[in-house]
Amino acid sequence: MKLIPELVAAAPAIGAIRRDIHAHPELCFEEKRTADVVAAQLTQWGIPIHRGMGTTGVVGIVKAGTSSRAIGLRADMDALPMQEFNTFDHASQHAGKMHACGHDGHTAMLLAAAQQFSKQANFDGTVYLIFQPAEEGGGGAREMIKDGLFEQFPMEAVFGMHNWPGSEVGKFAVSAGPVMASSNEFKITIRGKGGHAAMPHNGLDPVPVACQMVQAFQTIISRNKKPIDAGVISVTMVHAGEATNVIPDSCELQGTVRTFSIEVLDMIEQRMGEIARHTAAAFGMECSFEFRRNYPPTINSAKEAEFARQVMASIVGDANVGAQEPTMGAEDFAYMLMAKPGCYAFIANGDGAHREMGHGGGPCMLHNPSYDFNDSLIPLGATYWVKLAEAWLAKQQN
Image 1 (cartoon, rainbow, N blue to C red):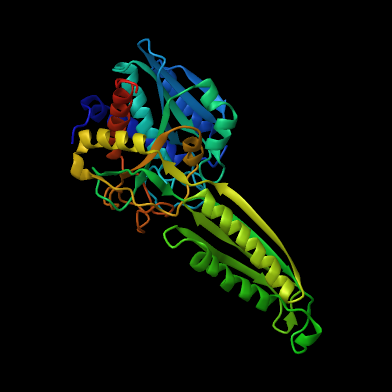
Image 2: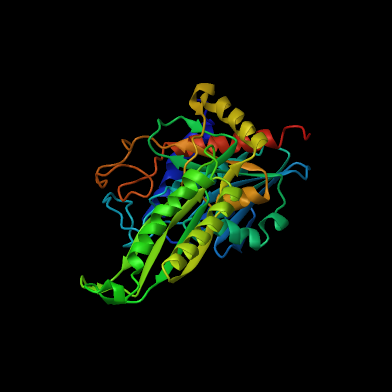
């Protein structure tokens, strides 16, 4: 493993910053203290900053040489609304808030790279350090773009990275094409006519209609979608009734839809609406159909994914850079990849053995109350960021 020695030496200090951020988690668009920490460090290192983009976002600007070329490196900063089970010294000090997805570590890895850039900028151009708020449901990437991220800071490509528990530290994964899914929600309300459950002929029971819909939605996956395309429809909530002897007036279905392409998503939304309305009508009822698109699919561009893979291989060797198995989880970095070429990679976080005494005892998996970021990733992730920027801004433009 070819780590930059200065980053190895700086890792304990950056790790202390990471643990401080972990102890003070902030939810989407509330990352004021975290943004203050980031801004203070960048300013201390002599890096110009821009604040307030996407509400609490911070952009650091590192220029070297005379070239107008530029690259963007992104880290998310927000935490999750969940209770931490860990009791070690840097556990969350705020009930119901926790860094359970490693965004504290993502911020730390990019800060480590920033410190290295401030000491030695071996490139010709500009590196934009994007510290993004509100990845966890707030669409912070979208909001930064709306606020002019790519107009104020024009860049050729943008790169992101997420820690991935379960794989051995020292490994990366990156692939071209879709690597994370779109995230969407639906809500269907079937309106019947309530009555006595012993005399169902006097009412219009929405519950059997809901059951028909749930079953019929799966035919979209098995009969409307191409077998080689990926798609998931999960009805996760069914709400109806308050008493055992009463037919309810209405029944509500809610759930999620995940796809790797907009085309499949368009088809699923259309077919779900048709099935819902026509199934209700077949039983003499009406229904409302609401479909909300949250995050689009995260799709890596081929050229940038291959470039990232080569940089990773130069650090850890070809054997330790694997193919990125697509996941049906969602990520708002997708918005940046819709606007710019780039790629979103995974860096292995280990199996949890790194955690200190006082961890919650559960698995060290993302969104688990016993999770903690592996600080040994800080010099490795930062080395990748530095080498990526140096290689990108040194290469000849085609």
